[in-house]
Length: 280
Image (cartoon, rainbow, N blue to C red):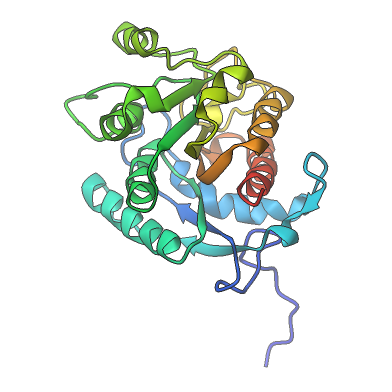
């Protein structure tokens, strides 16, 4: 009989107790519509392995990850190339999380999967808003003839909840037609106080890691210069502690692109802080 001890396969600080957990961490390893550099399907596993290098205590929230009572469900298994089926699998599993009165923290994986998560929370909650941290607008109606892509996820979400319920932070890249939509509906927020209109709403938080500057976060599919520092992003996230965050995801880490693992380590710290928000 093997004696161990063995390295845990869970994200650091995770509880083995699903029933009493408040938040479920769910790996979403899919990147078949990535339009530039692929590899985000490896993000959840890489984050779990790298998480052993961070502390479970959050300096920002003065709380430990163990106190958040989160369960690591592992990674979903997806077929290659079939976006419709992948979205269906994701939505069905996120449905289970919310039917069990828990919150989702999705780890991806390409941004398209946020669409499935939003569809799921819409079955459970009304008065939904989405706050998106991203370098890109993600408002393409189609990309290379496809309706379902990571570059059009917010366009599809807007079809469900309306642009008035979307806030976009950190934008600095997109086609003119996309920014025409941004301007028309004033979705871009450049000051934290502009989010105050969402107080009282049930907010799904989605973070595309390319919102961070590539000097810090090079391990993403489409890096864009001019992004947030880690502290700037944390300033925005800490502001959201007084909002009703019902679920979240952290997407688009491509760990193998950054051989220094700085991108993955940074993603792990963000996972920790977003867990604190979800447990607030």
